Image (cartoon, rainbow, N blue to C red; front, side):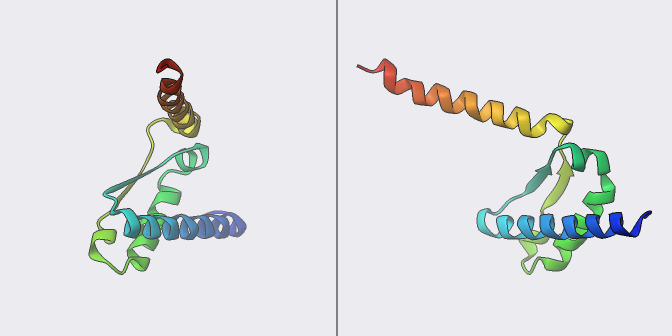
Length: 101
């Protein structure tokens, strides 16, 4: 909706994200996919609607077509917060080996 180059970029991004969602959902039987980061949260439905539409087109299995796709409520900090949480969990579990002597 606007600049044709921008529309093309969003269409390519939506296609790539949809393909990743379809492949991942087929492998691990997802119910929900939450997309985060500044681009997703800034674009909102301008990006999410084409992703949902493309998933519906690409999905050959009914359980993949039922996957719900939404935007993270953590905003642009979603990746940073997820990495920090993973680091905290990983460091807590990896420190256990130092306490057992």
